[in-house]
Image 1 (cartoon, rainbow, N blue to C red):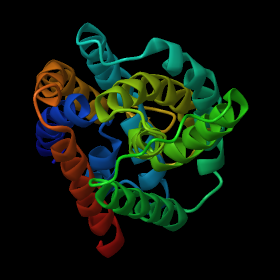
Image 2: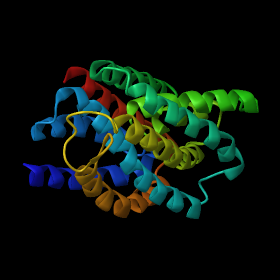
Image 3: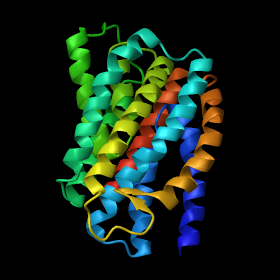
Length: 264
C-alpha cells in the first residue's frame, strides 16, 4: 500500500509542478485533497489526517514554488518593487495560521478550505471580462491584506496564490505579474507555514513513522522530485497563453477542487 501511495504522489507531483508554473499556485489545492484521501489508506488516525495533509502540502510547496519563482524571474514576470511589499507580512501571517490550524478540527479546516476556494473561483470567473483600473492601496493596507492572505493560506495548506492573484488583479495588476508575485510569496508562505506545522505537530500522538511534526516525509519526497522538474514547463506555457484563458483555467480549476472537498 505504501508503494502504491508513493507512486500516486509522484504522479501528483507532475500535475502540481505544471500547474505551479502555469497558474502560480504552489499545488496545495491539489495536494491537500489528494493526501486527505490517500493518508487514511495507511491507517492514519482521522483526527491527524488534515493537519498532516496541510503540513506536507506546504513543505512540498517550498521546493515547487522556489523552482517556479526562478523560472518566472528569468521570464521577467516578477515586479520586485511591488513583491517586496508583500513578503514579510504574508510570511508572518502564514506562521500564525499554522499555529491556529492545530487548534481547529478537521471538519472546520475542510470547510474553510472549500468555502474560501469557491468564493475566489467565482470572483475570477466574473472578472474575466472586466478591466480594473483601481490603483493599489497604501502600504499599510498592503501589509494587512498580505498578513490576512498568509493566515488563510496556511490554514488551507496552500501557497496563497488562490487568494493573492484575485486580489492583485482586482487592483489592476496584470495576470502574469500577479502570478509572478504570488509564486514568490508562496515560497515564503510555505516556508513559514511548514515551520509552524512542524512545531505544532512535535507533541502530537499517533503520527506515522517518518513524520516530522505534521509533515509526512515519504509523500513529501515523492511529490517534490517530480514537481520541481516539471514546474519550469508550466511557466513556459504561462507566457504563451492569453490572459483571459489563464483566468478561466484558474477559476474552473478552483471550482473543481472546492466541489471535491465539499462533497467528499
